[in-house]
Amino acid sequence: MDSSKSSALVGIQYGLPEITPSMPMDPVTRRPLLYAPETGFSYKPSRLNKTCILCGEAKDNTGRGQAHRECYMKVRSVKILLRCLWCDEEFLKPRYEYNKALRRGHFSFYCCKDHSQAHHAVKNAKHCDHCDVPMPGRSTRKFCSVQCRIDSRDHPEKPCTMCGLFFRPVSSRTAYCSRPCADQAHSIRMLGTGNSHYKDGTSYSKWFKEARPLIFDRDKDCCVVCSKASDLITFERNGQTVQRSNLLVHHIDENPANNQVENLVLLCYGCHLVHHKSAVTPYPWFAEYTRQASESMTSKWKATATSLLTVYSSTTAS
Image (cartoon, rainbow, N blue to C red; front, side, top):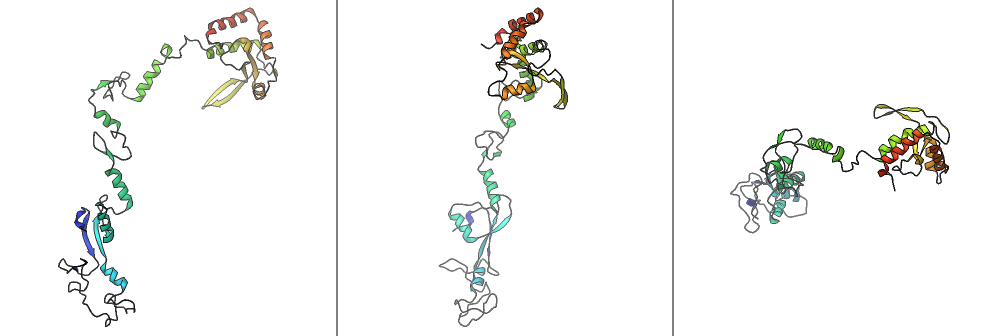
């Protein structure tokens, strides 16, 4: 195996002492000869050698070599000195692992798994079409940033239609320099007739807001069930002190778009809760009550209710 194929190769480290390039090699195995003048070890008949020539300890009866098996393999070990392609640090790798990698076509080496993964993430990543910077995990994109996408185009600078600041647009249709300017312009366009839901200032919510005082007047500021009087409740909301009535206006048919005075009745929170939590309402007389109470009101009150119905008739549910 040709070890010079890898650019990461720095050197070869043998376990043999005082190794020199002129050391004889075995013609069959192509390995360095252990017993040679260059190594300092001379061959002796194993039966006459009772001690290990490497560590000097007595040999056991197993094996016919001149050294212990462990000592012999330690001296014979060969390690390849490589340079990590990510951190540029030198490290040792056993020769059998190095040769195995070369046989598999791997010529890049790393000192640890984390550095291998980090380098491959960048090496195999797609590059930005403008600045050629690697983009790990973004293989479907052409540019690494919005600025690169803008710089890659030849659109001339133009003033923002909202703040007047000159900027380079992303496309020929870009009219605003930033998202806040676009949001502010959209808010202005949505006012009045620019809003698709604009209905000439009429809506059932506005109808309910104007009809609510009429219901308080008709029902004498009291709950029609328990006769609880109207009072103001003070509470904190979003850091502000808010006051609200303890009575609310209830829709008899539970349709918020139907704000005719005959469909509205004044209830306290307790009675309103009892009505909605019951399988069958305990107050079936609401409709008859509102009809009679509305008939007994003054002509001015009736005129106001009729005027509201005329103005907001388009919002009444069919």
